[in-house]
Picture 1 (cartoon, rainbow, N blue to C red):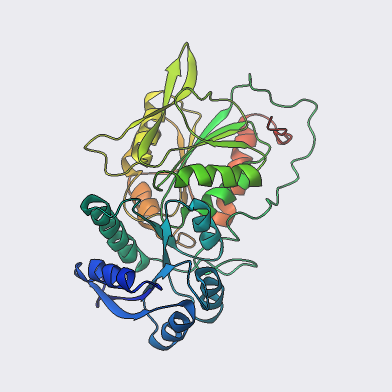
Picture 2 (picture 1 turned 45 degrees about the vertical axis):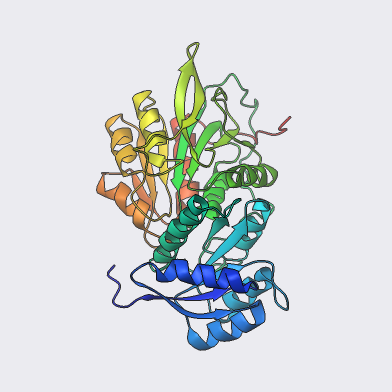
Amino acid sequence: MRLERPIRVLVIDDSPSNRRAISQMLESAPGIEVLDRAADGEEGLKKAIALKPDCITLDLEMPRIDGYSFLRLINSRAPTPVIVLSSYGHPSDVFKALQLGALDFVAKPAKADKAGLEQVRAELIEKVRASAFAKKRPAERGMGPFHTPAVFPAAVLPDLGKSPSSPTPTDTPTLVCIGASTGGPPAVQKVLESLAGLPVCVLVAQHMPTRFTEAFAQRLDGALPFRVKEAQTGDPIVPGRVYIAPGGEQLELGEKGGKQITVVSRSGPTDAYAPSVDRLFTSVAKAGVSSARGVVLTGMGNDGGLGVKALLAAGAEVWVESEETAVVFGMPQAAIANGPVTRVLALSLLGPQLAQAIQVSRGSGNFPALKPKK
């Protein structure tokens, strides 16, 4: 996709200094134009409807109309990609905003030093540019304009029937590794909902900063019949577990005492992403887990492309979200380019068909849910 004109951005923040700083960050990048600024959600809503910006940056805590109310209103009246700026101290705010239809978020630095501000500038510019590639998913009941149904609702789980025995932690699970970026949190949940009740262990590399991945894991843990946690080195690969790669670090598959475990490590100077989908997928391929399934969901960039190639070479399957539903098709497109991948499917079909394939490969179509968690 070639952009014929600058990406026009509306900046909404109740702090004059923040409006000024955000505008300066954006205007420092070629191809981005700050269309206007607004001091609260009410003014921002009027300007968004009148000016029709390509993207909006949004503060959440504002007078008159706060960021959450703004998201509800803009998505019903003039759907526009929204990048939320959120404090590191309130990661749960981000997931509420994503649930209401925000495209993505940028975490404000804990310290407003030169390094912290430069990191915010680079991330903000990257995500505003990504917004130019974002598109609506096909309309469904309860769906936000740039997302699947609400990010963290009470999970509506399929009836998987009854089985005479439950999978236990000693069963060998089917390993599923998922990679996602922009638009990914709701897509990840949708796939996990389809896998409920299956003896799977899931490793997730979702591009997200430190501390937010822990909150992401906690929200999923409360919504799904899996034990979901931020990964630590030594977590066992057993059925009914989902491990989220920590923000700013790398999650890989390792081995200790003849048993598979998770390994979390610091990023190296050559790592473009932390967490990296390539690092996760490649580690699974090196471990020779040919029964594994790799899943590539929506995201900007090409992370996962090399990992997909490694998984396919190792005999594993790779399932990819189609352009039809991917909020940003960059990562799925890179995966397909490194194919031939196993399946390319709309998000609503990917999870159920993946679950069915796992059931068939294990010789049964019925597994009970893996609760209780404790």
